[in-house]
Image 1 (tube, rainbow, N blue to C red):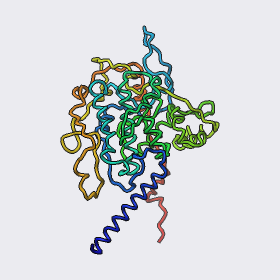
Image 2 (cartoon, rainbow, N blue to C red):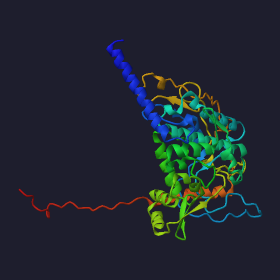
Image 3 (cartoon, helix red, strand yellow):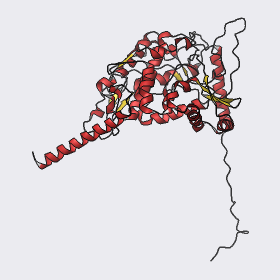
Image 4 (cartoon, rainbow, N blue to C red):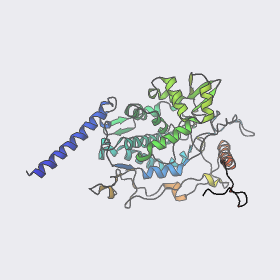
Length: 420
């Protein structure tokens, strides 16, 4: 062996040792995490692409924007009827909505296949090959696609409280040989691995009273920015937190995530103050240090309130969402996940378009062939759409005005002579 070969071998050994040490250090703080999901590669350029899930979200999630904290009026039945449709509670005019009707029939099979393909990713590439941000995006996307699938299995339903905690406790996934439930991902992987309250805002609960499902997939390179946006929306809505009788009242979901707030009242109060808008922050500061919990709205976050959509010639074009792409990505087949190396990968694997999971999305079946579906919104959803439109109009009217000091230029007659 030449000196050059020995030097090269030593370099490789040092790099391998450094890699093992870095992973071991990470594992030391993850003792509660199942072994296959411990560790990470901080310098890894590997990434996971979620093109199909991203496309589904873009076509089935209605982004309603920020809450203006207006409390909804009491729901009343239509004239001549005693039946009340639509979620009750003062928070029903908040939060994004999902068109769960898009996942009925054959489309449910596509959704299940996407979930199963995502679950198989670690069989092709162990998660500790990725950095922590890529792993976080993976778990959030897997959690959300699984939750949406679970709800689609029982849809149509209006109130999900009767399915709690069964939906979250059922071990419907197997990842790297480990049977997992939604609660396992949440409490046995994400919480002990990250110990950061922001992760909770990426976990869609399927209900009006929980954090939003975004209209895009989480991605490793921007996952924390996406979570920050969700945190800002939730904290500044009545679903998340509000002050009444000088007490900070908070969502039940903060109590579910109490492990992220060791000194619960103090830590949660600080956390909410971090995101609270100025007026809301003033109310918190002026109020009691006691934090109340248990605020909830278990009504399904469905565009039609969990009721069957009825076809009608009187359609609302602004709400006809479905048009899923055929195929996509590199090559002729679409995919649930695309594995790619980052820039500078000497293997060239990042350019191969190799897919982790081989779902061929030839069509998003019935709803895609139609491109648009003729639907008639129930009255409570029409109320919400009108509320969203009014909020947008108010933002346009308010605009933004900035005042600056202005020194008018002196004319020739009054100008002071310049110094020589």
